[in-house]
Amino acid sequence: MSKLLRALTDNRAFKSLVRHGYPEDARTRALAVYSNLFLHIHPLKVRARAIAFPRTFYLGGLSAACFFLLTLTGVALMVFYRPAVPQAYQDMKDLEFVVTLGVFTRNLHRFAAHAMVALVFLHLVVTFYRGAYRRPREFNWALGVALFVLTILLSYTGYLLPWDQLAFWAVTVGTKMAAAAPWVGERLRFLLLGGTQIGENALLRFYVLHCVALPLLAVVGIAVHVWRLRKDGGIYLGPAENTPLADSEKKAVDHEDLVSTWPHLLARELVAFLGITLALVLVSIGFNAPLEAIADPNLTPNPAKAPWYFLGLQELLHYYSPLVSGVVLPGLAIAALAVIPYFDLNLIRAPLWGEQRRSRLALLWGITFAGTGWLIFAGAHPVWPLIVPLLVIAIVMSFAALPSPPTALGRWLAQRSLPFWIFTWFVVISVALTVIGIFFRGPNWDYVLPWRDGVYF
Amino acid sequence: MASPTDTEPTDQERERRRFLLLVGSGALGAVGLGLAAATLRFIEPNVLFEEDRRFAVGRPEDVPVGTVLVLVRQRVYVVREEKGFYALSAVCTHLGCITRYEAEQKGFFCPCHGSRYALKGTVTGGPAPAALVRLHLSIEREQLVVDAGRPAASQALLELPA
Image (cartoon, rainbow over all chains, first blue to last red; front, side, top):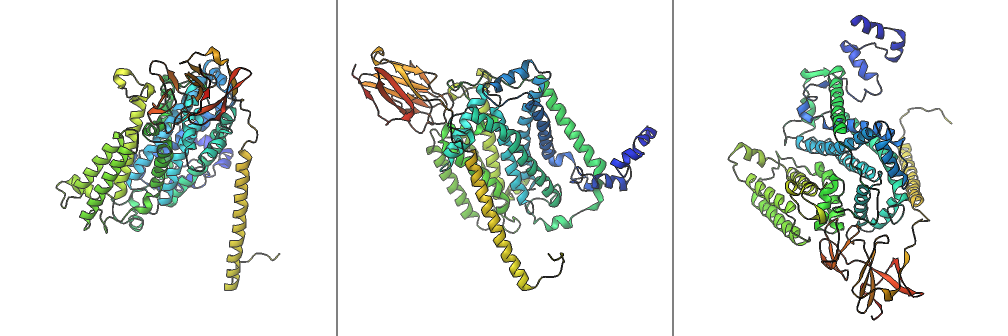
């Protein structure tokens, strides 16, 4: 075996490509990373603790893997797709019935897109709870939030392309939401659609955004994101939450668990990539991406549902005007996410529940009651999925504010920062609204029980 | 041009360079803004190939009082009541889905977010922020003509006693 490997690598042709030969000792392993354009975004050595699976669940890497798969399958699909009415829909039918592996390729593209949205969201959540958003990583966190929005936009622009009923009505709802934005909304919708109706112009514009403009932005954004991760010290190992960061992080570098990137990190990356690829391939063999009847602007399906990651928003739209639920609330949520690290307090010096405990509790309940009142009276119906989490979190926060927390859990809760509570509320309500939108809403957007009435999805 | 050197600049030179830097980047920024505006203008279509939204419905005397005409292709309802006719856009004012006419409930209903409208177009439930838009109606050559591209006043009625 080793003779064969040597024969393959120990010759002029291979060495003109890879000067250092097959990497087997510390020097050549370092060179393998250092002298390779594609690998040199990695450091030469990484810490074993940093590349352990439970630290990050490799969510960022898996998102990037999805993006890679989406690029490959997307380019393949472009060969058979014309962004025109009604050819677009006919081409979907061709992919389904005429093209070898057409169904499979489309399934893989579709499911990788769903997976990427979910993985990027989970990546955001894990990064937050790990505390990896803090100084000096504020910018990279904000960039990550932008990439999350970009991922959703990529998926959403792709949603129109099949030109079926599902696509048409999801996009109708989405672009009307954009139109609700004050001052610029109508104009934005006009530019996005290239007209006043969703027609051929809109299809072509979504196609260009989906296949060229947004992927270019995503590639640049992902590259900067990974670069900044490297420059900000790699995977966050951080001291336990709530201690001053940055400096201590640098001092605490512990050289003992350094291992070479080749093969330790690269092998893990390869396995993670192969794992998600295998999972998506299996799903694509087992399930088919939906394709409904050709888009009919005169016939709204009942219920008309947006893509699943927008169903939380659609549920919100049931309660509030498009301006509030389509623009103001999501806009505030995204802005709040992006600025979180700039408002994170040093909790050792200024705990959330310190000397000003009473006044802060009063403020907390003042805001909670005002918020609950607004949530009840501003909308068409009381919005329980928003109110219940708000009250539960306010109650838990009040327990955390007890002068001497009785249990370990109480002490842990007492040390949580304000962004922790706000972020937790954001995660709970997004998940709750999305689950309700997916499973518990049926025809006429009335409540249904999925186990009794089936899932309208 | 002098060959490039790395000598330390004097304070005066530094000041001059900062001034030039600000002027230069300001100019580049202005050009950038201009390009962005030009790009926005470029992608804004000047000509739309969208269909004419004016169409004839038929002779008014053929429509008995109490009828609700559901014009699916045009996304318009035409209602005949005692005093005359009015036309409603079937597009939900919430997010643009097409409402349905429900005869037994005497109203219109949106499947997307559950908005309900009375026969007059007024909101009776759900998140819709406004009544269904009334459309311009006229009689031309004995035909009832709807202009779906032209909204009318909220109580507009083409008076034509039965």
